[in-house]
Length: 103
Image (tube, rainbow, N blue to C red; front, top):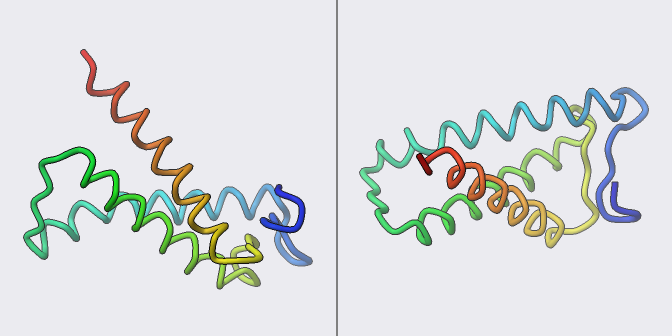
């Protein structure tokens, strides 16, 4: 995907299967973020604070999932790639939320 930075697929997992499974796992973690916030009684009303929280959740999720590269098939070469991917995911979520809430 990014030369020397992000790898999709390995000897046992195809790139398509790796990206599908990785996307499924990220979606599941992202969906579980809201119930986890409710569980710890964390109330964030400012959209910027919520975006920061999702940046952290996405970055940690990417980092943890890529540590399981032999199973999932997605790997990164450095932690800062987790931050880059977490930021891109957060921006994607931000735009989707904006598009869905504008009525």
